[in-house]
Image (cartoon, rainbow over all chains, first blue to last red):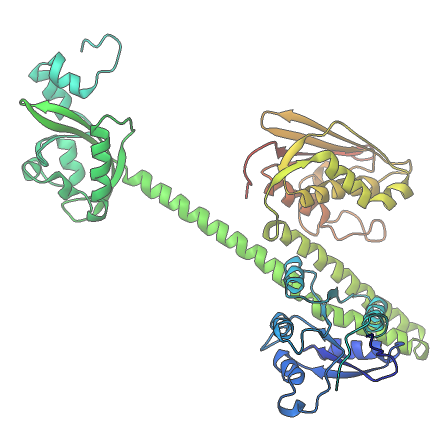
Length: 150
Length: 377
């Protein structure tokens, strides 16, 4: 059976330690076609707590999409990705790596850990905005995702 | 000695040809090589040179176990080597550490041969002091290791800074652009100009960091060498430059190009930078680029020749330095890293790059690559 994600509120978990980047992503998604509720985690530990509904995140929704930065303090993006993709309850959630790096090694590592895609943050603002919107539109509207019971 | 033009083994010297005692004594005692005869593991005869090397006098050595002079850790190896050599295995000798009378260590090289001495089996040994050579070798090894380490550290350093500086720079450029986008119509002409300079500066720095990163990656992220068909590499380079080549109306000719040992991605980059320069630094007429290759022993000498603006001979060395530019950005854009990257790639392949040019007539870049062999780094 196909799920119909349109028409319900879509939750996106953004994991990024840079307030500058976070704001740019918020701005980009604000005027996009897909309406999202953006949840923010400032590091890997916070992201895992959100996903496992621990601590202050007891009532957290299960996100439809995770946007994950790689370089973060305490627990980096690769560790978060590995935890998500090893967890039966979380592994179906699409994880898009949004990284400032074009490092070939990191790219291979993330795909080997089953990242759904790797995107390098464009330097140019217009491109950055376009890419973030495109990711939202693709994963939340174009792609059919498994039904999520809440 | 009647040896009929062949060198006689020591065994034969002692047993068959029987030199006079006098000749034997002279050979033995005046030799500049530490010489001795050992029987049942103990020194029976020693010359002055052995005494000098070991620091013991002759009397102290006679009757002493010969293995006593060998550093304990080296004894097993010395015993094995000596046995093999006594059995007739060909060898230039073996090395070990000798403990001198003053309890200091000396590196020596030794050869042994089986002889009969006073009708009993014995061993004739020769040894020379190679401590100085070993010290020089060790110093060279240490220096080389140290240089490799500091080179690797520098490359890593360049990699990390160019990589990590990109993030904050992206913030500067993104938010300057956001400022222009959102408030552009609320500001005056001066503000627009200031924003334009800030954005331009951030973009240029981005380009510099990008190329610096690529430069550092030549050493840190290079692939192992394999056979690379240079024609394929040139074809790929030309495909990457397609737009520039078409726009300039450039014509390309190339010889039959050989297969070399190398990192294909880097060789594509090498040809791409050189052809790209040939097209970029052109005169009014369409650029003509000619690539040729000539084999010289185990190297291939390549040349990339153009009919462009050329380079003053005074700059023929400095153009290969990082961030070196000979023109303003308005005349020719670029970071000044292209040829530095070329040089680094050629050197990683064990070759050399140079340029010959007459201003106004064109330039010829030449470089060598190894036809076969291991990675040169």
